[in-house]
Length: 152
Image (cartoon, rainbow, N blue to C red):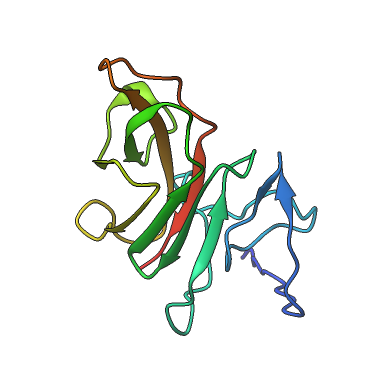
């Protein structure tokens, strides 16, 4: 009979990055420090459930777009874009802005609180895409994608 064991060493928190993106809080990494331990479906990452909803902040690669997640509520914020009349945010579990969004919003402000419980449940990688809209109705380019980890 085969035996399979997992040696978990829990110590001081460490920040690991892969491609400049911090690893989600509570996600179990393999010994190399960069590979996630995933479930049988090969997609979902195995993670410790936090004892309480601890706010976590995630920022995109150029620090122009961020979100602080507390439970399933996200406080999105971004840098103002020259001549933008409005901003459109698409939030999806698919890392592709053209694939549509599970939820989203438009605003003239540079911050927005959003309850994401209607669109997402459980522990997921979620991607947020932001682009400006100008007074003539045209859209600017998407700024670098924001990857966040949502838990309930």
